[in-house]
Image (cartoon, helix red, strand yellow):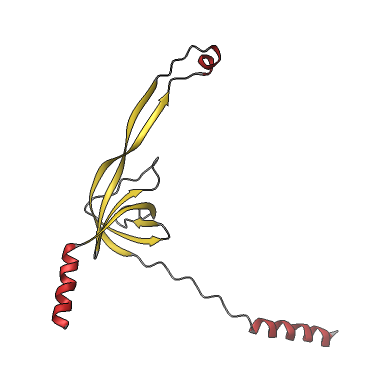
Amino acid sequence: MKIGTVGVLLAIAASLQGVAPAPAKDKPAYERGVLLQMDSTHCGYAEKDGKTLTGEILGTDGQHKNTQEVLCQEYILKSDRLIYRIRPKDDKHPALLPVGESAEFRIHKDKMLLRVPESDGKEREYIVVSMTPRADAVEARAATKATNQ
């Protein structure tokens, strides 16, 4: 019995030596930027129908609809090389970001993940509406290339 137990323990030890520890995931790298301004932009209409269940059954409801324009928050985020126009992905409960504060962001798949360390530090999803290269960054790169040649 003792020899069998030792053999089993040796087999387990040998199999564990071949297992390499899984590498830990690296923390995501964030870029830094400054929130320059927030605008309210037109992003659709909200319609409220005037129909009721009894009106549908009896046929007494009119086709009156209340239509209201919906405005969405749109932020301008300035990074080292680009200027981003972004909108919150969560339209129903968007968080108000502090304009003039620095923010950390990263691009993941088709969305921007942004957090403001000075406020709550939560990472929120944003849709990138547009990206524009910064004029001063392009001029600085052109000047650097000219001096290197």
